[in-house]
Length: 78
Ligand code: FES
Image 1 (spheres, rainbow, N blue to C red):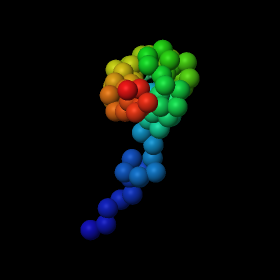
Image 2: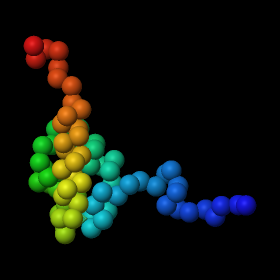
Image 3: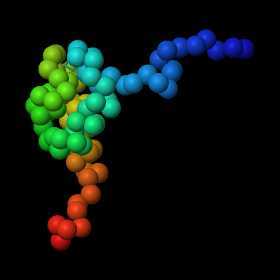
Image 4: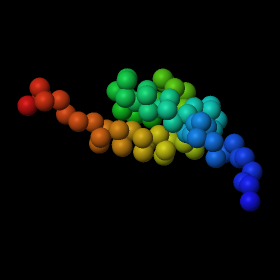
């Protein structure tokens, strides 16, 4: 039995974090990492994610927390 092609199943489809502003997970993660963002307001300023209904704010906070916890301290900080 053949499966019907479903766009949602496409590996090329990027996950959208903020539906209002259509900001993808890749954009949020890159902005947090490259600009060392620490707050939802920072993320909104650089990506616009979270600048609408605010429903995505909990998700953005999760990305911030995860990336902050996965950042490794520099050896030169010792
Ligand atoms: S879903 Fe991000 S502001 Fe509405």
